[in-house]
Length: 382
Image (cartoon, rainbow, N blue to C red):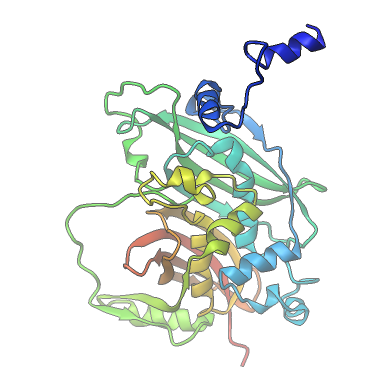
């Protein structure tokens, strides 16, 4: 085709140029244009597939401190060189919450950008050695399983094992297993036998709409609150509750109202491209009616509240994490904690191991996140 004929093909008739920006003309053009879609559907995943996520992310001190400050995680070892040295670090390290959020954020474009209910995450683990600013993060995900949804024929259920690695050494810095509902290209008929036990309404990256029904359980007669935040305080509280109709359970005073930084800026800084967090146009027709908070922001905020009442030495891992409903701009995130156990088996003599259940909830007392956490908690030195 000659230059002249190419020019004529853009005029339509060859007599009058097309005004592509004329509103009526452009509207007709949009109707005819094919959308180049992003993300993958259920049919694109096969068990055993290994996806190497193209984006990488250099973990910076700025990114780390931005995440920690906005989610109220104020452990001095992650802020001050003297406190870091006391903990055995060469410098203030990367916080596990920021590392977890960055690892997941990088995967969104390949795994869950199409949307779908986030059914849970478990076996979140970190290395024994600290991670420092300047580390280049590379992420891969393996398809562990895929299944039919018994209740939602337009979705399938996919589980991935994700590993965030140090690009220079190959060391695994963060790993976890997460399960999502993923849209199908074509709905399928089901017989009601597919993976029903795995299904609970949550939202992609913590923005679902689930609830539950059933008989109301009887709560313990008494709630015991630890006297302080040291390992011994948790041991004493558990001993007080033992043999009684009691639980070691308490709420934390601080709350954090969701704003433009927490809802949009933090997820985008971790390369989380899910439309739920930055596309107001698309989300206007969603149950929330607006963009919503990245689940790892909700989680980290609740954990920040809890840690403010503890003497945390080291994070060991997280299990059974679920995101129960969405958190919208203007919602305030609070936290509630149950102490499950305390064992004198930490990696150092200066700490003991405590298992917690943390529940994030909003100003309406609606649970939005829950998960179990294992952490090493400092002992008293006097």
